[in-house]
Length: 326
Image (cartoon, rainbow, N blue to C red; front, top):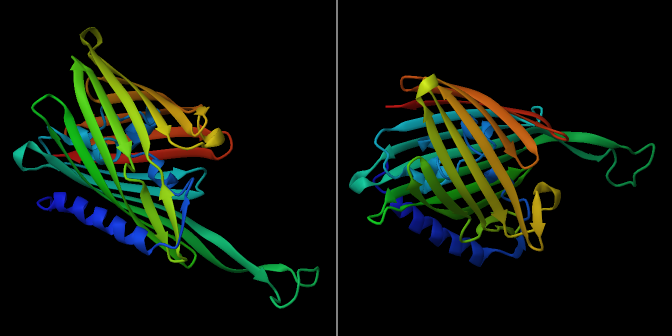
């Protein structure tokens, strides 16, 4: 399944050129790629979505593909999320496994859906709006967003880990559809004992979405820098992990980000994990201006994680993910 994974990158880059050539109107889609920023895995969300330096293997293709380097076992993870008081659902599935020559790869599916969106029309479209000619619900539709990601990572002789992710994107709203491609790059390194560094450059070539209407939206690049530090606590048979990320965008995103300077904006992600007997994990974090929390249970090769986040305007979010390694 992974034998030809590197060929995917060449194919998607070629498709990118074809789509841009055929595009009509070309605009910067300020939130066109928002569904790509929802995070992956309940463990990461519980820790403020800080996972660039040390993601779990089955989420490395999403957060930082360089973290796939050195993978010795196969990992699979599935996550289901109910976002913002069930306004929409989010599902994530990824398989990561070792490859030849010291490399490792992953295949990832990311899918979001908003259902029962009403489409309205006037009772008599030939007449103007009035008390006698009111707006009625004509039918209901949905919004669907899908990303398929192929990732590869490996270690270099100099001690750095490098990786890349190719993305095939699809969206549909009512009767309109869009397709696009994108590429992420990542690097990582162990700086000292228990201290890791990671950097991920997402949509590095400017990802695009070409709509059936002739409009093409560009998803601008972003950069995330992170560190992760862990310390064993033998006296209490526990271990603590601290993580911190800073995610920056090359566009102004208003109140969606904590820091803004002209065309640049950034958001901090902080998290802590306390693991007891390598079995029970308690987690907390800070994402932007909101707190996150969660817990996990590891039994042999099985892991089950849950995460929670409250939002002042958009309500309660919870995620559950299940992972298996073999």
